[in-house]
Every structure is written in C-alpha cells, then in structure tokens.
Length: 208
Image 1 (cartoon, rainbow, N blue to C red):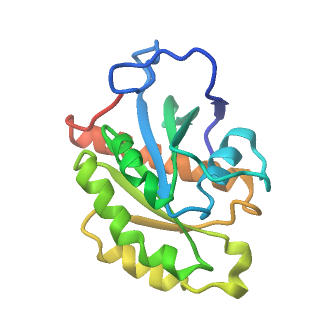
Image 2: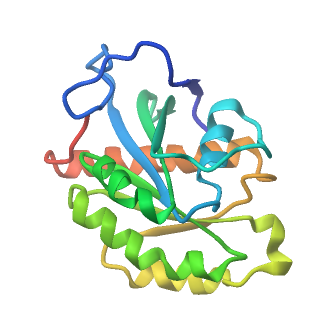
Image 3: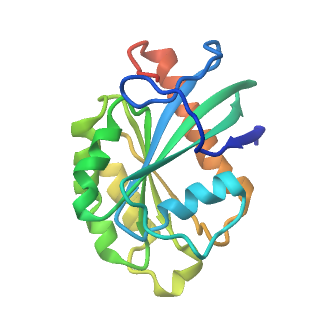
C-alpha cells in the first residue's frame, strides 16, 4: 500500500470557474473522483472512512454535494484526489450530474442487501457517461458485505454485470463498517493507478 494523507473540506478554498479546487503544486497529478449511487448505500460513510479512518453510524443523507481532498502515493508519486460525495435522492440527481463534468473516475456504490440499488446501476452509468468525459474510469462497489446473510445480489452476478459493460468497469465488494482501512485505501489507490495509466496512454484525459 502507498502512503495516504487527507485534508477535510471547509474553510476558505480557492476554486476555478467550474468549482474545482486549485492545487498549487502543478507537478503532482490531480484527479477528480465522484462517489455516486442510490441514497443510503454508504457513499458518505465511505468518504468519512477514507478521511477519518473510522466508521460513523451517525451519518445523514447528503444534501446536494460535499467534497474532501486526499493524497495517495502510487508509483512513488503523490496523487491529489478531490473526492465528491453526491446525494442519491432522485430530486438531487440533476444537481449531482453537474459534478460529473471533468471527473476522472467514479465510484458507483450499491447495497448488496437491497436489490433495487443494484438494478439502478444502468441508469447511474448512463448519467455518468452522458455528463462526463468519455475516458472516465468507473468502479462499482458492492457495500455491506458484513450483511452477506441478507444479500440480494450475488458477487458473481455483480461481476458479470460489470463485465458486460462497454466501459471496462471493475467490481469490488466491501463493508464500509468492517473492511479494514488498508483495503478501503486500496480502492482509491487502484483508481488513481488506472487514471495515471490511462493518462500515459491518452493525453486527452482531463484533470482539474
């Protein structure tokens, strides 16, 4: 695992005209990630865990959007990740779609114990691909693995769904509540690696 540090949002933050955070050191890669999915699938809990290294039972549904900054180290270089947490409620979908613009990667979460959050994935993928750069990387994350006895979606079914997508979508399963911090961090490191690899292969990959 690479090194990892975090920076919470809040206070005075300089942004550009698109609402993206300006980072002074231009020599270090900077990527925008967006966490999406239906309401109460664990998006805010995942962001809280990567920042605070803890699971918070008291998180409330996000209203609109929120963001945090983190830095991961991959390939012996620091990579700045600006991570946006979006609301999953239907009335906020049009707002969230605005934040897909210039995104380099999306973590698309669903709850393995609620099948309707899985069947909603195609619509989320359409939202992402319609409103973001065509090179955006997507990883589907099945959350609440600690409740496997109540699962309504098998790991194989989710794997096969991702393999059928034309966007080269990866799949992983976690429990934000119980998965260790190293494994949670690994998800973000792997996303950073994929984006870096893509940038090497295609100079048109966006950054903020």
